[in-house]
Image (tube, rainbow, N blue to C red; front, side, top):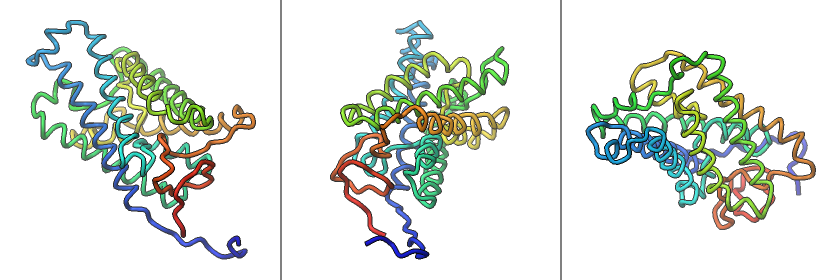
Length: 271
C-alpha cells in the first residue's frame, strides 16, 4: 500500500553511505595528488626518467582518475555509489534519484573528505607537496577567467552526461568506472594547464582551505556544479525513452541502495 495522503516520509540518515563518500573523496585526492608529487618533483626519479611534461601529466591523470574508478568497484564504492563529487550528486538529485537529507549527507562527506585528503597530502609529502602547489587548482597563466570558467563548466557537463548515458543502458552500466577513468584522465591531460581540471568543488575546496588560498576559487565552486546541473537538464531532453537505472557508478545488486527510482535489482532501505 502507498503512503496515506498527507503523511510525511520519515527521514532516515544513512551514515554508512556518507562516511563512504568522505573516505572515497579523501582517497581520490590523496592518491591522485600524490601521483602529481611523484611525477613532478625534481628530486624524484620520474622527472628524469620521463622528461616529457605532457606524458607525466597523462600518467598523473591516469592515476588520479583511476583511483576514483578503483573506489567505485570497492565495497565502500558499491555501497555509496562513488559520487565523490558534489557536481555528480547534485545532478543525480536534479534527476530525482536522491532524498534531500542524503544529498546533504553526501555533500558534507565529500567536502570533509576533500579537506582530509588535502591535509594528508601535505602531512605525508611535506615540502615536496609544493611541487604541485599542494594540490591547489588555479587558472593557468595567460588564460582569461571566463575561458577557465567555461572549461570547467564544459568538462563537468560532458562527464555527467557520459555517466548518465552509461547508467541508462543495461549493457553499458557495468563499464561506467572504466569510462570515467579514461575520460577524466584525458581531461586532466588536456586541461590541467588551463584550469587544473577540478570538475569537483570538494577537490578544490580541500587544498584551498589547507593552504588558505582563495584567489579565483569561486569559479571551482560554481562552474562544475552548474555544468552538472546543465547535464541533468540536457539529459531530460536528449534521453528519448531511456531513463537512469541507478545512481551508483557501479551498481551491485547485493548491496543496499538508498536512492530513489532505481530500476535494476537492489537491496532497498525501508523508511
